[in-house]
Image (cartoon, each protein chain N blue to C red):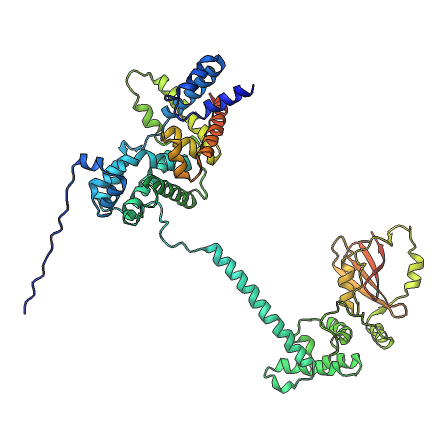
Length: 308
Length: 206
């Protein structure tokens, strides 16, 4: 069997079926099976050679056609111009995207640093832009130990809520962001929280938070939503590692990790006694399509209640 | 002061057709670089089929193959002086065929679907029926050729180019090995696989 395979392979690999060496020829003639294989592949080879396409077009051979072109002096590329420069559109598009990303990365931090300078009581006069001066003035007042509500009033007086310079557009958002970011923008805040002790929300700060956020009683709600009740989840959470939650935005961002479907409305509550955040997600105009995520101050999910 | 411009008359030596046929490829190429049309004609006639089959193996379409093959020769004519004799002319020409075919495909086949049996000369060929063959026999022969071409086109590229070089161009395994830059053992094994695949495909069609 092995010998048959070997001879078959030899037959298939023959270079020229009209010229085979004597040894192989004798072996083929000695066995009808080999002879059959040889005939098959020889006829295949002949069939291929007889099926040649001919280098003729409109009854003119290829060589005649080429020589005619040379004699006519028509030696410029006609069908393909591979030597010509091809503008690499794909490469250009990629470069443009990279440039756009780099420019964005270059200017975004600049804007932040400008705000940060303003927050650190840099002289507002150094900014020629009127809007920036106003911004610096407002942030300066915010970093003072004055009440948040005063800052909000000042903001209302100056009409900053309507200035396009601020990324936060609505007065409500500005109100919250001022109140909550007050803790984050302190000059002693480390750049990275990794490996550092979690910042504590002091009683004073918690009270401030309560002023701007609606409060709730976690103990009461935990009593209602006990384990095993329909729609109550008290294990298998996404947020299981400690991440400091010091403001509304951070709480919402973390709570969003627990959502499996998108919602269009978010409402945040804070329990100052237990330092628990309650983030309610819902979809406007639908009945029951909501989810409440309860997080502690270290960002660990304590409870989820589904309202489907 | 009057300067007379001396005009040097360039003596172009004329070679007989026989002399040109006896020349090596490099000699013909050198003469072609000097725009010797006779030398270039000999080169073209010599490699006409080789170029045509090498391009056809890529394009699988006779109409386009003719045009691209022309382009290969025109490119050879223009670049004859840049051949550095580091490889054989056949190897250089084969690479040129592949490049031209790829360029052509990139340019024209981007949004074009090529029928595997497309042959613009079909009608003309049927009219040119050789003597002693009935129209029915010619139709059958033509169909058979189409089936063979289709079968070749169905082969994987590495097998197809080897089958075309061996069966259609009649190149030896040593030559194929040099042109494709692979060893003879690989040529043999690819030929073996190619022939087997081709036989199976043709059994399906014929």
